[in-house]
Image 1 (tube, helix red, strand yellow):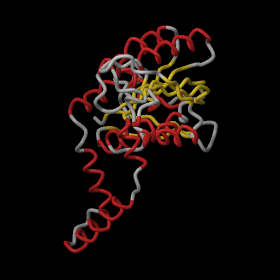
Image 2: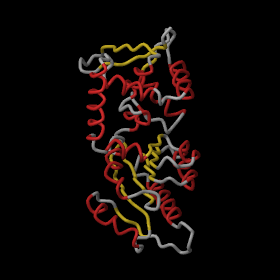
Image 3: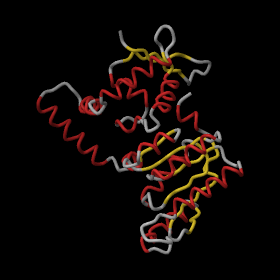
Image 4: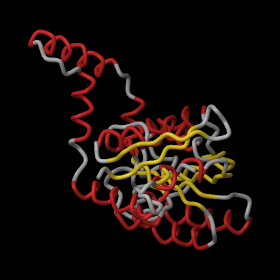
Amino acid sequence: MSAVQELSDLRLAVLIDADNVSAKYVKVLLEEIARYGTPTIKRIYGDWTQSTASGWKKVLLENAITPIQQYRYTTGKNATDSAMIIDAMDILYEDKVDGFCIVASDSDYTRLALRLRESGKKVLGIGEKKTPQPFIVACDKFIYLEILAKSAEPEEKEEHEEREEKSREESKGRKKTASAKKTEQKVSKLDKKFIKLLKTTVEDVADENGWAFLGEVGNMLLKKQPSFDSRNYGFSKLCPLIRATGLFEIDQRDTNNRQIKHIYIRAKQ
């Protein structure tokens, strides 16, 4: 079972701190949340009397998100946090959802995430890369907004660069393709710390012959590092990321369903 499947089909309460996220992210944000479950509650908190909130109106109507008004009682103080936390606890006690999606980059929500998990709820966090580590590790899974935005960008620029690269390669008579070089560039992003984490995780879930089910590897990676996402390293899925490292054998095994294969990996000897 993959990490996405483990969280899928949940009834989710999506709570967004408007002070922490731009309206431009909403579409890709909701598309990502749909991978993990059905957002039965969608609320966004902010002071909608401010001129900076004017860009939200169309976005909220198009995506059926309920705006919750929260005035700023004192300059420099964020009242949105308190309102969102109170609503989250009310929803928790009503017990109508299986999990929460907290969209914020603020460490003030760390205790809330921990409290929700203590009550047996799944917590998905979404925020910018500047999000403090305590909030990240308090979630079951944390996703960076920048990664979602990048995946939604038009691929024209990338395709143009690939064509230029291919032309240069052909003129020099090289055999290496542009796609292969692109893969090498992605692999170079993998630091030694991550490689060590990957190796130890495979060892943790492997059988006596060293084989580990890829789904279990993904789930264990999330438990150890909630911010883990193969897209952080330029890969859409975990399997291509594993393959690109060149450190593991990959075995695709048949199941009762001919269209489904289970993938197992083992460290190369």
